[in-house]
Image (tube, rainbow, N blue to C red):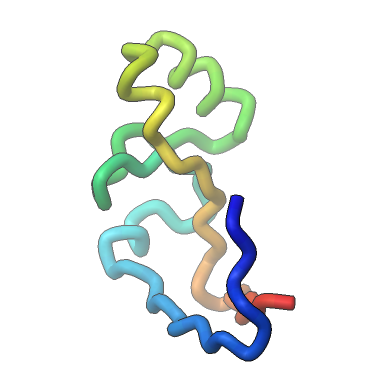
Length: 76
């Protein structure tokens, strides 16, 4: 994967409001839509295993932290 050039500023992305309904869950996101959500990463992996492989290869999996526990992630 290409690395950003040194000194290049990365614009922060705000958390999509649609994820508020999934706080505390592991989610699979495809094309800005949550396609699966589970309480544990293991349960989510099992659910994704049954998904069409072309679709599964394009999902992004993430844990939706509760907004009270939010933090900022920086590059570097």
